[in-house]
Amino acid sequence: GESVGLHLPTLSVQEGDNSIINCAYSNSASDYFIWYKQESGKGPQFIIDIRSNMDKRQGQRVTVLLNKTVKHLSLQIAATQPGDSAVYFCAGSGTASKLTFGTGTRLQVTL
Amino acid sequence: DAGITQSPRYKITETGRQVTLMCHQTWSHSYMFWYRQDLGHGLRLIYYSAAADITDKGEVPDGYVVSRSKTENFPLTLESATRSQTSVYFCASSEISGNLPQYFGPGTRLLVL
Image (cartoon, rainbow over all chains, first blue to last red; front, side):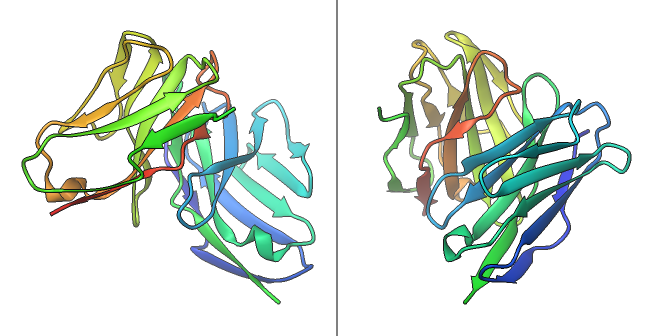
């Protein structure tokens, strides 16, 4: 079945630097991927998504890259700010309209 | 526009009691989902619904019951709560197709003593 995982449990980045959070997936049939941000005590918040017919998608300060060859996607955050401190999840489409979520990477922004 | 709301936000109950967690969305989304979030497991799907009166099991459905008589509401019931059901529960919704962003509620923190 689908499994989605993140490479690092915690990522520490200095304010103003760029952040890169990585994610690997196992199901070649997955055609949709999504990144969420979860702040402490809150529900996951949608950041950006990408379909498998794309390699890259940009949003406001965020970019998602998809490498289908190695089944890897990444979330890049430009000019990381203290408000970006949170846990970031990737998720991939599985079967029957369901998403499979990774366990998350905690992003810590240092001043 | 409230979006998606959950109630209660916090709940303490005892083993064996019945508990119902409420979820309400104002977007008229067809799909609704219930997840639980535990340390080390990420978000795990309990039940989901593609439309009113259509529900299906997710990854961890045992001990839970759902119903969906109206599009906007998707209550989750723990028929006889157990300590292993202590968790944070999130409701989510998405538009017609399931492979679109799911939007999450603020969560319900449930403690079963």
